[in-house]
Image 1 (cartoon, one colour):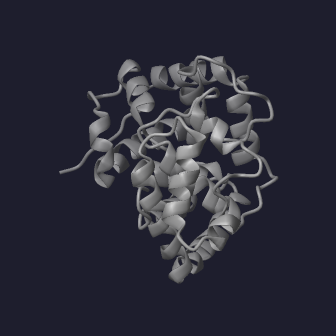
Image 2: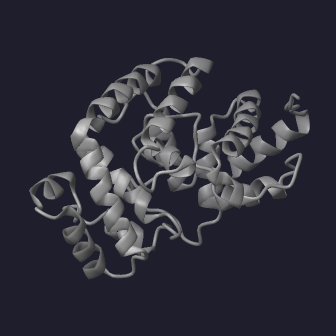
Amino acid sequence: MKFRWIITKQDIKSLNNFVNIHRKNNFVKNRIERNLSDKIPPFSKSKFWKWMVACLLTTQQRSGPNSKISKFMITDPFPLSYELCQKYKNVEEESHKCLTKFGGIRRTNKISGEIKFNYYWLENGGWGKILEISEKLIKIRKQKPSSESIKIERVACLLVQDLKGIGPKQSRNLWQSLGLTRFEIPLDSRVIKWLNKNNFPFILSASGLADENYYLLLMNGIQKLCLESRILPCVLDACIFSSYDTGEWPEDYELW
């Protein structure tokens, strides 16, 4: 049994019109600068850790420009930095204290446990795997987009799903936030809602996104549409994300 994506001229026109409407949003401009420019953001354990925590926090909680999550993530110094966690005797307990004290963050018990698991997963061999795949991602970011780019990005996303709390969506969110991916994007209820409104060939459900195979089916269709429209998926993702926000993102904002 085979499934074939057929992209029409109207599909391409509609996508370009949508992107052109939102291209000047600060959120979209920041995405283009970070994920498409020749200036590739430097990779470090600290940055990976910060965005991993961000992914855990945004599961089942909004992260718009005025949200508690966004305010937590731009706090300087970052309250749950990798360097601080290295000093803690009890990572789970200290993480819980930090999140609870800040206020307005859901699922603090569960997230604290995930932070503990992920910390020890990384410390016990995980960092070697992360650093190895990050080098491959940086290498292909320096090259023109290709099918090889998609292949390596997918390998990277599958790898970080070994972390607790990081599923198909958040694995894409993580690497995209680091500025190292262009094709593999986070699919969530916003994207599903947009696709259903824009003549996707069948009705979609956000509940299925937890399954990697369902996720990849949709991802393949989006990537084909974007490639034929000459728009990279990470730009479409930014346009969809910002189109549902009630406020504008600051020009210098770096989250997501």
